[in-house]
Image 1: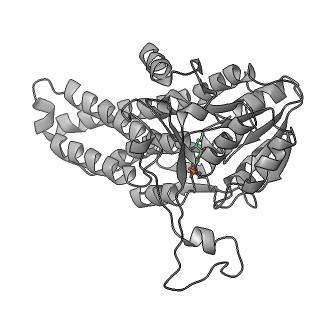
Image 2 (image 1 turned 135 degrees about the horizontal axis):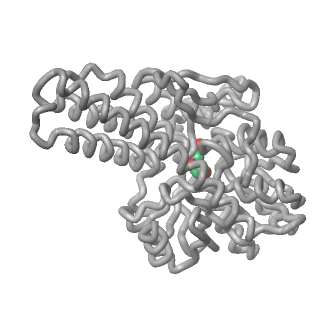
Length: 373
Ligand code: MRU
């Protein structure tokens, strides 16, 4: 078992169950502050601005959010409740398009609420009088809270299992490259791509992790390098364009990354720059592993060409980390800032999931993994 890190969960519901508490990741590594989210707009904004980010953490946030918003809803009857459920879920779902965990969690929460609404109203009585609806509302909210908590707990367990399976792929003395942050801060605890590393470290393996800084939002520098080095793991930061030199020098034994959506054929969307790392890995014969909870596998998307890629504001590239703007500013100048790219399944050595290590052909191994669980 991976021991609990002495830090707060990335996402939590407070004891009074009236607000979501997140570590505000835009302030890291300088400050660790807990941000309280109470309204739909605050939650939407926190996801959009990457105060909470990483596919699994976004999914858990969305699950708690839908419970919280329906608890605060003034809907007075069955139809009003159902209508608001749809509206709030659609609003939150629009905050970021690429990570499938967001829509998956919202769909699961909606299904849970709808089932509870219908199960309690076989005769339609509770729908139509105030007392009946009030009892029904309590029952639905209890079911939603259980479901959101289960989604949170399943994330924690999934990361633990990915850690166990991934451990079989690493060896004492390895240099490991990772891109972006698929760590503790991208999940509730442990992370996906970092789980085998935490587990190996816990078992006494000497590992050295190389973190791509991950332009333009620096999740590798600000988050991965922070959490791994604070856990006592030897960590070296490099700019994104340095990994080829590192691989050529023989410093990298394997590569672990996370993912935001894995299509049915294994094509994988992850942070921009991931596909370049995978292409380099193939050139240098280095295994390239994607770590994925089952919630990030999306059998409804046949291949990577169908994955919607989020494009973000130009100022993240031109201004965000600089004292002065570091690019021209005229009518002939534009910026290309996609947040993700798609790694072709042929470049992926294996997908490490909580139910085992999947190998090509991925259509078969992904579908078998999902149908077993
Ligand atoms: O834009 P971000 O920071 O949300 O992107 C995060 C990533 O690309 C992660 O690698 C991915 O979500 C997996 S997290 C376990």
